[in-house]
Image 1 (cartoon, rainbow, N blue to C red):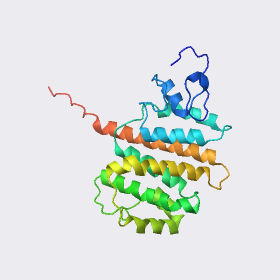
Image 2 (cartoon, rainbow, N blue to C red):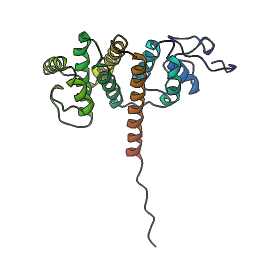
Image 3 (tube, helix red, strand yellow):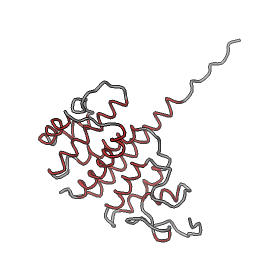
Image 4 (cartoon, rainbow, N blue to C red):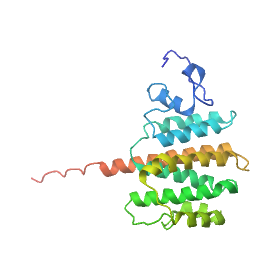
Length: 227
């Protein structure tokens, strides 16, 4: 990386060979983290980084600068915990489902159910098919806004079984991709703001999850010996 820059790289779409040519969201994160110039830096969870790249590339040029303030908060958000994938996928699907066109709602509703099933399984909650898992309030609200798609998703999901490997490699990334496209193509007045809010929420979810894990891993303080 060129350390002789007299200014910060400017956010723009796509990949860039070096900071002088600009930066996407994750390239700027790699720059600030002191890593090798890359849009796949090690400092950020891969799925969260994928969401950030999609938001960066699908935000209008006029509004992309509003994303810069989020870049420092995505650094050092990485853990090999499938809950992060599930939380990101669930945040994306519940955000996009109420505003997306009808042809995308079934897939997004299935994504909601799959993410809820995976979180329940990882938390040790007994579950069979992921159509029967109790939903969070956010998922309940999103599904209630699209009752036809929600019912179709439940029927489809009764016969489905998703593995942890399949969720990480396919279901979660597909949920993120479909959600961003659904928001971009939605008939709403300000998709840029919704994309930014989506990324902000996903960062907050991952931050809370990592902090919770750190708290649980912290050793109990040793009480002073009585004399």
